[in-house]
Length: 160
Image (cartoon, rainbow, N blue to C red; front, top):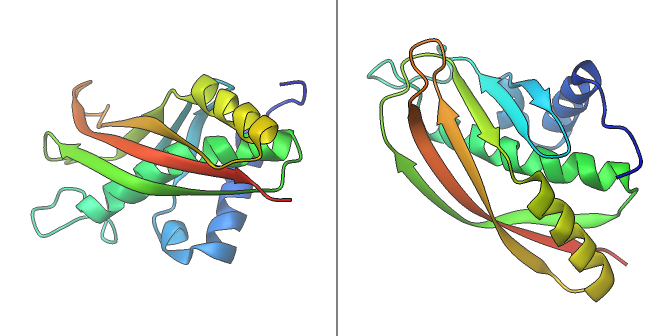
């Protein structure tokens, strides 16, 4: 890509600033980026009073916030790297909740290369590009089993 990725500390500050400015609901989840590369991202949302349901597992809305961030933050960082003025959103979401997430949840998205190709396609075509982005969720403090899977349709358009 040419331009270096932000450090984890910088990425977490960017995420925090974005969340408080644009989507405070994200900020209340206090997400933390654990790993960031050109290919993938992993972030954690802690299980706590604001994120759990009456069964003491993570509320499905909080799981969706984590999936949104895992896919969306990769696009955000790549757009910043390339100094792109773009509009992106998720236009469809499919979720499979496999097990009750009874601990902190780590969300992983390994769609960096697909997102990079979609950005290049959007730049060259000047058209909206839609791609599927997969996110998995695990509770690593309990087991390596996947507790939820998400398939989000990412829609990207370069602004003129």
